[in-house]
Structure formats: C-alpha cells, structure tokens
Image 1 (cartoon, rainbow, N blue to C red):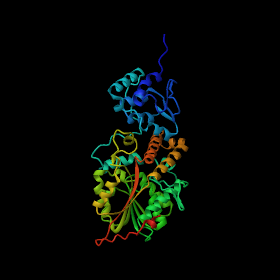
Image 2 (tube, rainbow, N blue to C red):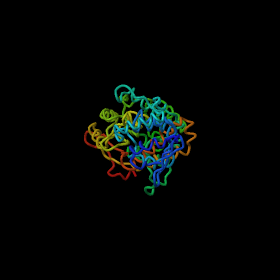
Image 3 (tube, rainbow, N blue to C red):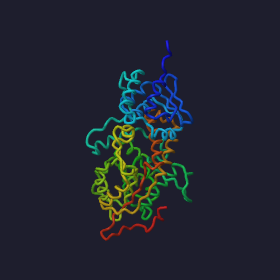
Amino acid sequence: MGNKPTVAAAFTPLLRLAFGPQPPLRFEFWDGSAIEPPGEVPGTMRIRSADALSHMIWAPGELGLGRAFVSGAVDLDGDIFKICRALQSAVPDQARLGAAGVVQAADAARKLGALSRRPKPPAEEAPPLRGRLHTRARDAAAISHHYDVGDDFYRLVLGPSMTYSCARFAAAEGDSTDVSLEDAQAAKHDLICRKLGLAERPGMRLLDVGCGWGSMAMHAASAYDAKIVGVTISGTQADSARKRAAEAGLSDNIEIRQTDYRDLRGEKFDAISSIGMFEHVGAERTPEYFETLHSLLRPQGRLLNHAISSRGGSKIKNRSFIGRYVFPDGELQDVGNVVLAMERAGFEVRDVESLREHYALTLRQWVANLESAWPEAVAQTSEGRARVWRIYMAASALGFEDGGLNLHQVLGVVPTPEGNAAMPATRRAWR
C-alpha cells in the first residue's frame, strides 16, 4: 500500500500555474508538508486548513485569498512589507490560471475536501452595499463599516494624536524621518492651518469636513484661536471628538456636528479643511462637493483638499479585498481632475503639493503600532479586523513608496469679483 500523498504534493501544480516554477514564499500546509523554493524568500505562508483553498476556489483572486487570511485559514510569517512586495505581482487569480488551471484547482480542492461546502465570508467583511452609489444613506453605511469599530482600537493603531491621515515628517531644521508620529501629525495640521491663513488673523471661522476624532479642530483652536465647526457622519467619531475637545478645554471654540456636508446651508466660513474625506465622495459627486464648499466660503476664503490620488483615477471594486474589508465604495481621483473640478466650481487653485513619501512613513508607523500591541488590538475588536488592518496598511505603504498611490494637498481660494485673492506672494509663510 503506497504512502498517502501530501497536501504539498496536491498544491504544487496549482502554485506553478499561479506563480511559475518558483513560488515567492515558502508554503507550509496543515499536514506538516511544505514547499520550499530554492534561495532566500521573505517569509512563509501557512495554510492551516482546507478552508483556505475553499475560499480561493469559491472566490478566485484576491478576495478569496483575503477571506482565507482574515478567517485565519492562512497565516503570514515574516516581514509583512517584504511578503506583500513579493506577492504584489504574483497573487493567483482566475485570469492567470486560465480555464484549465481552474479545472485543475477544483480537482485538487475536491481531493482535499475543500469543495464539500462553501465557506461563509468572515464577519469582518462588508456585505455589498445597496442603492445608488454615494447617496447619503449608502455613504453612511460605508463610513460606519470603516470607522465605527471602536475608538480604543484606533487609538492603538493611530497613537495619541488619533489622526487617520497622512502625517508630515519634517523637522524645523530640515526634512527628517527622525520625528515621532505624534509630532509629524501636529506638523501636518499646522501646515494646513498656515496654508489656510489661520495664522494671519486669529479667531477665523473654520469648517473641518470629515473631522474624524477632532484632531485638526483641536490644533486649529489651540494654536490659532480658530472657531471650528467639524462635521462627520460617523456617530462614534462625533461623540469622541466632542469629548476630546471638552477634555482639552476647547469646547467654546469647537462645535462638532453629526451631519453630511451636503446638508450645510446658509452659513459662511473663512476657511475649509477636508482631510482624508474626499476619497468617499466619488467622481459623480465631485462637482456637487466643490460647489457646496465654494458656496460656504466668504470672498478670499480658502479650501485645503487633502486626499489620496491615483493616476487616471480608480474606483475600489466591490470584489476586491479593499472594497469588501476596508473602503466600500471608495474612489481615488487623478489630481488633475481635482484641480479642474475645483476651478469649474469657482475656485482659483493656488498650490498643489504631494506628500506621497510621508504617507508611506505614516503607514509603516501605524503597522508598527499595531504589531507591537497585537494582543490588545485583537481584544479591542477581533483578530479578523486586526488582520485586515495589518495587511491593508502594509500593502498601502508599498503603494505610496512605488508611486502607485499618491497624496495631494490642493489649495484653492475664492477671489473677490475684482480678482483679489489675498494670498501670500510665496510659500515662505507655510514652511
């Protein structure tokens, strides 16, 4: 009677179809067998049960692999950034396998018992959102999925500043990466305040769109005595922002509203900041977005739009890992289209600045925070949620490092009918 074939032997043809003759990682299987590529590899993918293959068969491509990872059927051991880089161009998908490969994969799955049932997606996965894209109700559901997962978890990942956007790692004497995350976030907030002209006249009225946990509002109030209205559609963020402002003694300067920016009417502000919110607007709603913000500004008022961008723009697909687990309905826009849309809404665009490398540094620090507090992070939310954040932040950091993603601050102003924009002659005041 012959020896029973190992799981590794059954997987080997599939890995060759997906990755070529040499897999990018070491693969270890639930029966103890392994596939050892020659040479040095960045880490090990541990496939802990046939459920991993079931996820990948029923949802070929990155969604199935993501489900396997989030559920715990797959583990990754090693430097998460190096592993993501190795997998970046080698993730198996249905197109690469081809029809014959899919048949072979299904046959291997049958032999390993992976087709006996269709596994349920992990609880952390967002169900497909219903209704027209970027309505108020659908946007509220998308935002709730991402942000309403517990302030304690976010505090572990983001650090004391509770700022969920790109920091700016620059020391007073010159650019430096030897800056704490908290100081880098403060530097980002201060840069935005100066671009908006808050230093030129204390007591200016600022609207902070998508105010998060109130960090920008608190900086503007404490450093420049600004009067801030912060708006968010996340109930947990609104409650937390109010509490933080009160604890800092800034309630007289800061009003936090749980409302959609589209519902703001009949008010005027001296400046508007929108930090990490534009990704949820969508291309179809972009004209309305900038027209609304333009209508809320007094003459010579400024808007700072701080957002992730991509060349040519991209919609986050519903069946992608990011679309199901991180940013449902998210859209990244080309910075050129952002500038054009601002101009069409009546803004004069005065400055565009990329902080791409700074976002890569920010994400690496968030990953370090998460990994260093892993047991506590899991206790605050779930192991699946912590897994989602680890892989998504690491992959995003690589996207900013290689230029696939970018972060742009676009500054616009509403000039007077005579064309007076009241802008400084140079950037010197912002540095």
